[in-house]
Image (cartoon, rainbow, N blue to C red):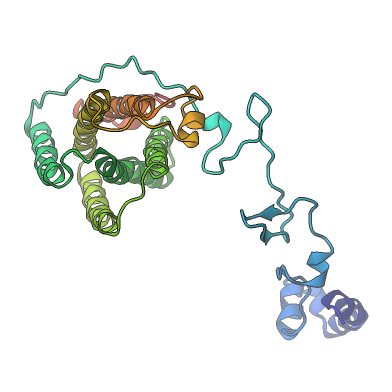
Amino acid sequence: MSSRSIYRTLRPVLSSSVLSSGLGTRPGLRGHVISHLPTVRFLSSDTSSSATRNNQPKNPIQTSDGKVISTYWGISPTKITKPDGSAWKWNCFQPWDSYKPDVSIDVTKHHKPSNFTDKFAYWTVQTLKIPVQLFFQRKHMCHAMLLETVAAVPGMVGGMLLHLKSLRRFEHSAGWIKALLEEAENERMHLMTFIELSQPKWYERAIVFAVQGVFFNAYFLSYVISPKLAHRITGYLEEEAVNSYTEFLKDIDAGKFENSPAPAIAIDYWRLPKDATLRDVVFVIRADEAHHRDINHYASDIQFRGHELKEAPAPIGYH
C-alpha cells in the first residue's frame, strides 16, 4: 500500500483521536501528530518512488550519457539558443555572460610604488615570480594554467569578505561584491579555456593544489588585516600576468609556439570570429588581465585616500 493510501485510511482515525485528546485546540498540531507516527511517510523525496516516476517532466535533465539527474523537483532544462538559432552548448556560462573585450586598453601601465605598503606589495610579487619563472621558463601553456588557478583566488576572497561585511553592517557594497566575483569568474573562464588546449600533468596538478592552499590562506589573512594591501598585491600580480601574456604573444608571432585554432568555448565566451586562433585568445585574455589590474589598483587607491570601497561605485562589467 502506498504512503498516500495509508494516509487516506488513517486520516479519519487521526482526526477523531486528535479531537478527543484535545490536541486539536493547541498549537503545533502537525508536529504532535507526526512525532507520534514516525513510520508514516506523508511525502517523499525518493526519486525512485512510483508516484515520482508517474509524474516525470517531459524533458528531464540528463547527463551527457543520457542518465536522468533528477525528476522529482520538476526542473526542466533551459533551452537557450545563439543569435543564429543554433543550440547553446555551455552550462558553465550563458550567452548574456559573454562579451567583446576592450582590447584597446593600455597594457604597459605600471603603478609605481610610493610608500611602504606599495613597496611591500611590489617586492612580494617580484619575489614570488622568481621560482615560477625558473620552473616554467618558456612553457607558456603550463605557466598560464598555474597563473589562472592563482589569479582566480583574490576576487573570490575579496568578494566573500565584502559580502560578509555587508551582512554584518546591514549596508550596501556599491557593487564591489559583484565586481570582484566577476573578476574571479572571468579568471576561472581563462583556465577553462586553456584546459581545452592542454591538460596539466600530475606534478603540475600537485603544484596547483599546494600553491592554491597556501595562497588562499595567505591572501585571506592579508585582506582581513589590510584590504588596501591585498588589492595592491593583486594589482601587481595582474601586471605580471599582462607581461607573461605579452611574452606568450611574442613567441606565437615568432613561430616558437603553434598558433592552433581557438577552442569553441573561447569563441563563444569572447564572441570571437569562427576562424579565431590561439593568438586571438591570448590577446583578449591579456586585455582581461589589464582590466583586473586597473580595478585592483583603483580599489587600493580608494582605501589609501581614507575611504571605504562602498563610497565609490564599482566598475561592474569593466572588460
